[in-house]
Image (cartoon, rainbow, N blue to C red; front, side):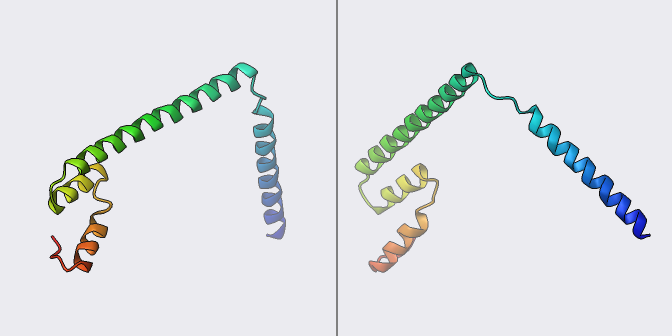
Length: 101
């Protein structure tokens, strides 16, 4: 029984070691063209995200500027922030003695 366990563990260890060795050898160094393309993709993603964030900021600012009362502000927060701040607005109203909606 002990011999079978030893043989199985040795076989498993050799299979795992062979798998790790082949994984290391398959990773070839990147060429300068691959690196340049990767860098360009990352920079493009950053630019796209910054544009999207600026658009959301402008929409939020326009909505809040146009708000005439607390209900309008709540509507802005719900639509532009997907309701994340709803709980905080509700707590702020309750702290000021206004009924929570």
